[in-house]
Image (cartoon, rainbow over all chains, first blue to last red; front, side, top):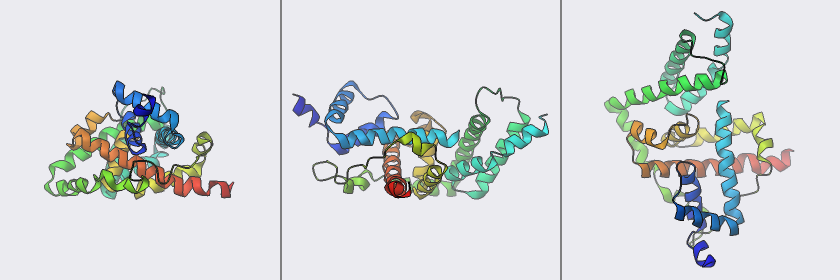
Length: 63
Length: 194
């Protein structure tokens, strides 16, 4: 089950979901699949942190 | 009317406002006009309560002026052509090279270390500027509307008459390109510089 779910999202798709998440809430299913993927994928977890930092940097751009 | 000191304080942010307007509009003359209007409105108005920073307040005024300018520009026939090139910036597969056939990373993101430390460096913001300049014009425009002006996606779609799907493709592309640019130009050389 776990295996199947994490494999439901590739890294490429995970990056797209992370970007979408910054603009509007994901559906429950998307959220679960993304979380499970991030649990087992260090590269995408890193990507997610970088996207959050990018947002902070843009906020800072203005302050 | 505001006192001269207030005028000086406002003028101190002129450079920043111009940079934001320039990135958004990609038109030096128009950017100058919009900033001028913003400064005039700021001096004339009494809306500054001191609750937010002066810069944030000015950005708020600039936001409205930019949206007006874009709206105005879209009514001009030749401007439609300039914004029509959006399609060329809509290729979601442009970042395919980053991923293998099965959708896994070919070149996984590097460790960026302590983000706080970077954000507090003046030089980091210069690299950020450089990376924003390198984005395709419309991509930068849309990204700035979302991240600096903090417009909601619905508002951006409405102002630019693009679909929600096109919008998320553009934002995704902007983020991917900026991430790559920052990694190459800031984080890669960071270890060596420190």
